[in-house]
Image 1: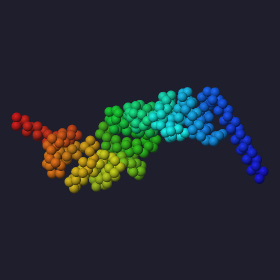
Image 2 (image 1 turned 90 degrees about the vertical axis):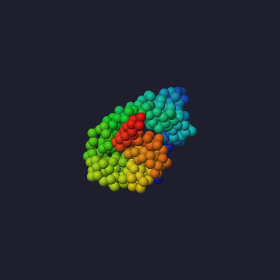
Image 3 (image 1 turned 180 degrees about the horizontal axis):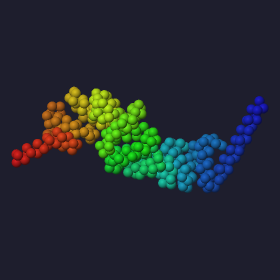
Image 4 (image 1 turned 180 degrees about the vertical axis):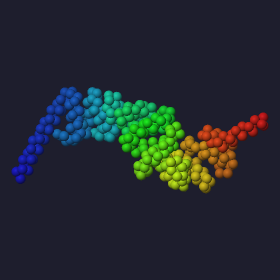
Length: 334
């Protein structure tokens, strides 16, 4: 009983010292000491030496932030973003993250990159996002490395460059980033400007496939469909195309649409996907023929010609041959 009483007295004495320390911080903060403002805010935030109060923590973080204390700028941004002790305000959050980022705060730099990337609290700008991602990637931030890989793979906001995409994905893979494993496997098995390495691609696909990553499902489907590095199996390929399509991979949706057309004469997959998503000449050739025949779509020779031209641009030899024949025929008529 005496031991418990002694412990209670010790705890109360300790709390008294903490409160006294907090009072000292408060006086220093009120006198304009920026470091004390920050430390006092931390104590209010964590409930050390006083009752926890996000509202008071925010007040002192912001005062320190407005005096260019970089960690307080980050904390102020975080509290604005999450509505802690202040009304949620994403624009103000971005502005304070940006202040901290410009003064070297690494967490804020990655945050600014993602906010530019997504248009959160600021105007969406892939170019500005890329600049901040590059800064973060150079110090080995795995998410920044992955996003740089994505940008080079997608060709936005820079020209598509498979080698650069592979370079950044490789760095992220070394940090066990599963999404980058799937994307690097795609480049090594399907990327036309990079020398294929099917064995490495299959190795990289194992973990993403186990975790149901759509890009991995699509890449494995492509390998099965074309017999690249694995035994050709188009039925199994279609299973994986369907899985990837269900998760929003538009190239997979296109392959599923082609299969449904060839099997059932069903054009709904093309019409649902929207023309802009088509990447294969075969898709445009199918539409060209259907507009030309009027069998499923309403006959429209102008639309048919547009589709033949698009198919030809995407390397479809049948469409190219048709356009050449059509051109020669028109010359003879003249």
